[in-house]
Length: 119
Length: 112
Image (cartoon, rainbow over all chains, first blue to last red; front, side, top):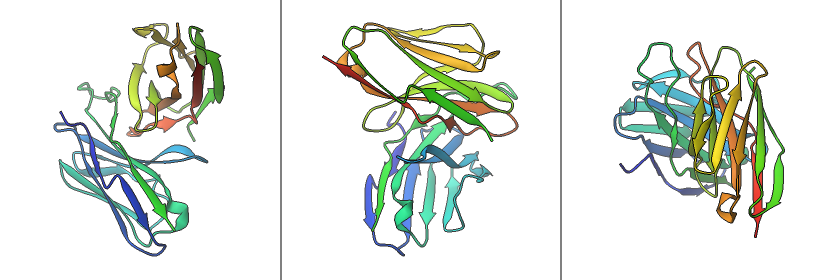
């Protein structure tokens, strides 16, 4: 299995531009998560999907951020307009349900991340 | 708000030493605690713990959870330079909150 795939690996853009980050989860996984990592705040959950449906977007910082999952093998995280404080590494992760109702998910597998720099 | 606190924030030891990393948590409807290792890339999964007192072991690494005292430890014996990394502790909670809440991590440096 190729693991979680993210693109691009690095993105440098100017303030005000639209940025789109892409993720392909591990085949068969029914949960997909977007995280952001900065030195100041560590790793933070932004949003996650179950069976392509957004479940919790309370971590999305503001309306400039949006995420979609049009099908089971693809998700995007969009920032429009981007600002310098959005500079971070953005990780996508996927997971399987544990199979027992109400039980914990199995472990999450992380993609290589996209390092975003907004100047 | 769920909280995960790791200590120490950084640790420098010599190769061959044994280290213990700590993770305490305050989580509503706790479900599981996970340990990840992060080198200069994505976090890689180490352990998932859901029950108190049951040690999980993988080679020189082991971890245990105490749900009464709300903490977990990660032990690494006979450390090697390849163990140098940031070790992250994370929790999941119930009620549909399946995302991970991470601690800030412990930056472990193993000197030859």
